Length: 442
Ligand SMILES: Cc1cc2nc3c(=O)[nH]c(=O)nc-3n(C[C@H](O)[C@H](O)[C@H](O)COP(=O)(O)OP(=O)(O)OC[C@H]3O[C@@H](n4cnc5c(N)ncnc54)[C@H](O)[C@@H]3O)c2cc1C
Image 1 (cartoon, protein in one colour):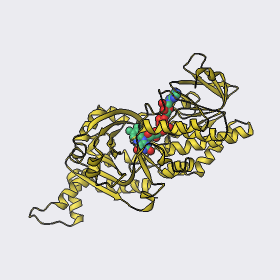
Image 2 (cartoon, rainbow, N blue to C red; image 1 turned 180 degrees about the horizontal axis):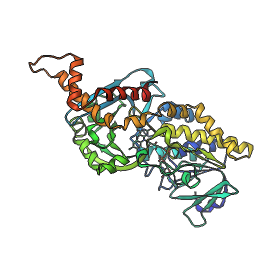
Image 3 (tube, rainbow, N blue to C red; image 1 turned 120 degrees about the vertical axis):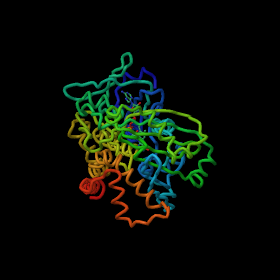
Image 4 (cartoon, rainbow, N blue to C red; image 1 turned 90 degrees about the horizontal axis):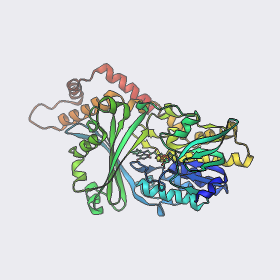
């Protein structure tokens, strides 16, 4: 789009062409509205970072049937591993399935490379009729009598008017803060993710990870991988590369005076990871913040003339079992788009009208998921879960499987002895069982 068009009036202005923004732009453009999608990067996805597994393929399938046939996807994920690490040992839960929901369309999830995926997704919105304006930073909103009536871009004569603004500008949403929907985020609510893409031959990846065809694996790690810093790591298989990275709670990173890229180096050198990345060549390095406090950091989601979606609304579910943000970005972007369509039909853009957005988030299970797992982010970042229990699992397993001529102990005394060795206290363990139950079971 050329700058001359910026003097026009739009029905909907979407800020940020990540998955939330492209979903919002796609649905509103398809409804015949005049839509502008503004992106600060040179192209959509240029600076965007995820692991990335796009879970909930069925959600995007509702918007773009059989989307995986045309989108730049890497592998469909049929295997998931959760590993607890000590410096010498890895104890993991390995899930692998050939059940139809994992191996047949619409599949459960795909690994993607965000620069390619986001570009493709924004192109779908453009094909549906949205104008995409790249390399343009939105600095502020335009207000009239308490109503948001457009955005101010960092361009000459860069004010653009629109009936509805949807802020999809990511974790550090400038716009949500400007209008008072979001507060200043605290460092314990944010994590820093650093990531590398490491090139490897397709045949090597299949062999190393025991994969057939285009099946893929997603591994997540907790424990010694981030030392005393609270966080975890991930390793995902792409077609001919691996995406791997370390995610560290920002407050903990600062307190422990650690550097995220050093943690990433330590992760790559761990005995359970080093053989998997051996011989690979570095293709990409990136870093990005993650809103990881879940339900407690979700801001007010709408005001007169404006809604907030995706990471800008804190909608990334990070629970230790899940790291899912792309699917919630798409769901929330779509819900905000649908609410904008309803508002445009009525020519009524008040907060009351836009409250339909919240109804849609409830109906499509976004609000419910975050509420259900509201205790999980704090639990997963607790000191003992991060350091003590991975060590307990590793040492306990080492003792369990060691055959050295000494007396074999049964599980209870063995567990008891290991717990005392690592400094665990029974009353703390009981407390943690309760917290784990509250976070994940009921
Ligand atoms: C290391 C890491 C690993 C992750 N792994 C996964 C994973 O495996 N699976 C998963 O589902 N999620 C994962 N996530 C989370 C996921 O990346 C996010 O939840 C998701 O990207 C949110 O999408 P979004 O569209 O809301 O925001 P973003 O993807 O951040 O997009 C925001 C867009 O807004 C643009 N923008 C920002 N400010 C402005 C402005 N002022 N003007 C114009 N444009 C602007 C940005 O350039 C960007 O294009 C991971 C995140 C990280 C950092």
